[in-house]
Length: 250
Ligand SMILES: O=C[C@H](O)COP(=O)(O)O
Image (tube, rainbow, N blue to C red):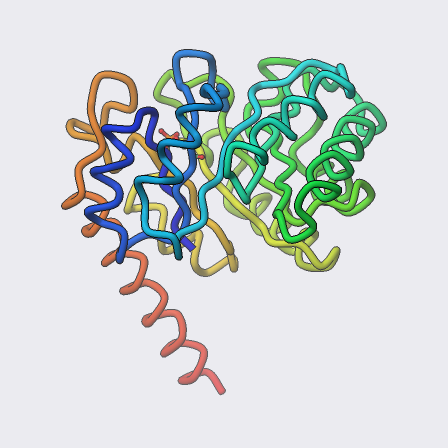
């Protein structure tokens, strides 16, 4: 699946123009961090702006180790219309802290909407910010009752997912997530050139912003529908090549 992250209602309208090429519209506010949270009214307006059959995701923020605060914020995102709730476990330094936070989120969100989908997100560059190790995420997600484990980059300085977590370790992340019965989502300045690897290792959700913004600039650039379409076409091409390679090997 392709998850695209607009930062405003205007950009979400551009995503809506490319709706047939994407699977999830992810509301965030990059000015507040890699998984910065946007305002509830923006989530609601974006929910209204994109086709009803496209799920809206919202990031709850690069959150501190404050389970009550984060649970309440997550409920706010769900009440505002998001059905995918993504939490960046920025301030959690141990798996136990991360599980505490995610358990609160899962309960708050699923009490309100049992079919909501909760994503526990860590950071590929965790070593730069001192939060939980990327490979701990699948177990954190499983033990908290989350539905997916995700990695993104915390510091958007041009370094990318594979700069911090090489492909073989990403493959292990995906394997652990699948073993736990979860979806595996990967992001972090992903470009079309990464799609072959991401497909081969079985990534379920690829999250992008910069690659579908004009000039590849996630802050100054704006999401362009034609870039979303081109990115999706590359995903499809890699998926068919991968399927054909598997069929040929059998
Ligand atoms: O959830 C996905 C992120 O928005 C990825 O953003 P990026 O591709 O600019 O790193």
